[in-house]
Amino acid sequence: QSVLTQPPSASGTPGQRVTISCSGSSSNIGTNYVYWYQQLPGTAPKLLIYRNNQRPSGVPDRFSGSKSGTSASLAISGLRSEDEADYYCATWDDSLSGVVFGGGTKLTVL
Amino acid sequence: EVQLVESGGGLVKPGGSLRLSCAASRFTFSNAWMNWVRQAPGKGLEWVGRIKSKTDGGTTDYAAPVKGRFTMSRDDSKNTLYLQMNSLKTEDTGVYYCTTGSSGWGYWGQGTLVTVSS
Image (cartoon, rainbow over all chains, first blue to last red; front, side):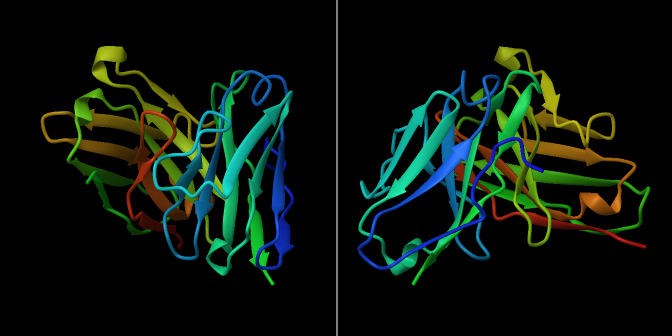
């Protein structure tokens, strides 16, 4: 069982907006930055969002991150078929003294 | 472009040992904090551990499931990160990635597969 809680699946149709939640606690999300990673099938993860809401260069502005209290969210607008992937949130946990991941959310584009 | 290339994976019996390597290039490896992340077949990502740069103390931190069995080290003269894995268990099976980045882990290797099975 993961320290951070994500829904196992999400779906949407092309052009729609979907959000993926990530729930934690005061020792992790509540006090540290949240990062989001996208993993396409058979490939290494890719950094999508850093420091809660910052996008690395090259990541489309269709992807956005937010954080409030002990929860964070990833929003994808203008959904495209190539967005079909697994998405993971991650942060540092002060109690565990380590990085923790969410269990991952499999996004399906219908 | 930054490159990370893992090697050393393979099939090992429970209780055995394996050493993974991650060869880094096209960035200042000695300044980087390096991490290992693994992924069991069909499962999610799991942080294994990190090693800080020598200028930041060179210390290591490990996830609870591997603490006392795995050891991370680095050779800055060879731009290489290592993961020594001892007392391997079947649950250590998976793809092992090395990763780094200054604001989030923007750089990942392709991964190396470790299979622990009798």
